[in-house]
Image 1: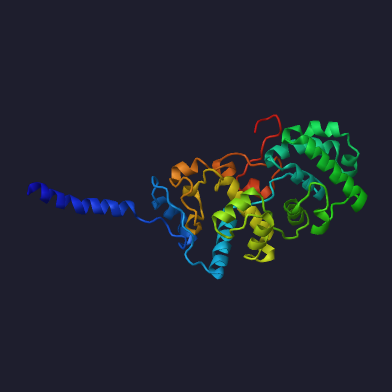
Image 2 (image 1 turned 60 degrees about the horizontal axis):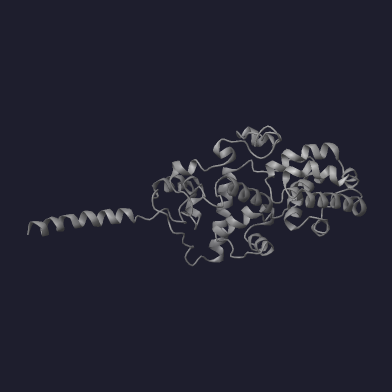
Length: 312
């Protein structure tokens, strides 16, 4: 009888503990300002299974997407293209070189390239072997040498040595696709465009803005959610978030400012302290990717990257 009585007394305690363990994490509909508090309350030991927004209408999706962009704009008000450039020619060459490597490595390499070949005419007439030696640190240097020399020749022969400001002209240049074209249009000419790189693709799928896999279809689907004037800055916000917080293998969910709006919350580390250790670049107290970043970035506490040979 005593065992049965003690068992009955223990049952409510076990049930209460079970209920406590099963307490839901912050919902995707919570106000963004409550993000940090909601994440701290979330379980740090139990991985949250991502759940898609239930019966989310297109209107609700648009609102959530724009809300995420607004939040990221507050987190990264100084977001900018992370390739060093002084003119459209430098930007298009740097963007072509950024394939299969980091912007940091490109930024550490291009000073020597542009010092020796400052114009399309100079690079078009360059000795490929000498260019290859400069571009070696970026990887795939032979293919990249062929692309940038071919690109320069096309600019000289077809565009009087000037980078064109139209999408249809840019994509005809050697080594230039829609992604590169929109980087140039948005950041060298001020013409809105969405840059669908690997970070952008990963995040918009995690946020369930689209289920598409093809970059062109992703671009079209996301473009439909935002006014055209937002496209370039949106690209910067998403890419910066992907590089600094929402990483591919282990997202820093516990340090994410948009956690309450993310259907994939819990795919990464949810403990705030552990998540904070995953942050990269200025969010983690480390230098960024540009050797010569904009002043707004420096004013916000960002640190310039070191030149080639000085680490990084």
